[in-house]
Length: 252
Ligand SMILES: NC(=O)c1ccc[n+]([C@@H]2O[C@H](COP(=O)([O-])OP(=O)(O)OC[C@H]3O[C@@H](n4cnc5c(N)ncnc54)[C@H](OP(=O)(O)O)[C@@H]3O)[C@@H](O)[C@H]2O)c1
Image (tube, rainbow, N blue to C red; front, side):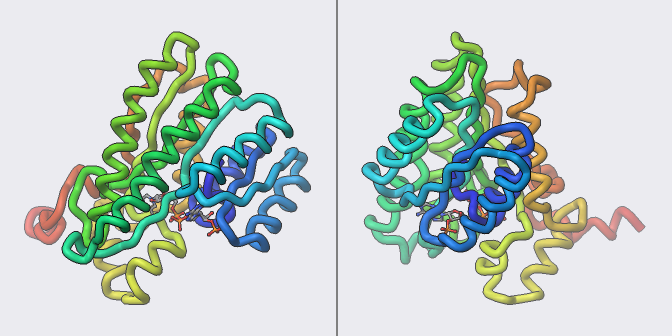
């Protein structure tokens, strides 16, 4: 479970730890990771906390070596962590794009490849995508390109792993109330309200709601769902762009 020290990843690991032992991956926030790990252990889960930069091939290999030593097998892989430089494409240099692709696309391929020999038959893989994979979002040019590739890899992995009964899916959240969303808004409350009112359900999503969808994809109820990207965005992509401004014309 990557990127589980904070935000969406933390909610996912808290949800899955009610039924699974867990690998709690993070990059550098050791105290946050320790706090989450301690809480999960109190709940009865066996937890291996591992720091790794998902942009580094050797870090990912070392993480999977540690997972292999500790558990020897995996039931579920959730790839949640992402890293990018948010910028316009004009201000995005080749090295920024290379780092984003390494952290999101190359890491996903490497982690699934390392998971395959450890994964039980009928195991589950879930990747976290984002609306930027499908729509141009300010500052998300590099990350959107990487997430679009991640969705494509998800479809290909799902077909390759289907003979073993394993499923490979992605969840595509809209705006989720996290520290990283706050950082994106730069503390601009008006931008935050515009995002809220521009979402048909009239609110941001919660990390727990993403965790519930991931848990569904990992549950027996989703055994026949594979190669799918499950959109959960409060209706944002159903309506699209500027149309939210005209709701009152027709709803009054
Ligand atoms: N928040 C949203 O509105 C939203 C919407 C759609 C999709 N998403 C996607 O959901 C996922 C989680 O997003 P988030 O907003 O919860 O938090 P985030 O800030 O994107 O990620 C936080 C987690 O990722 C880890 N991480 C960050 N950079 C890393 C790196 N280079 N190597 C390894 N780990 C790294 C962090 O570890 P440390 O704590 O050690 O730094 C932390 O555990 C991302 O894939 C994001 O693109 C988010």
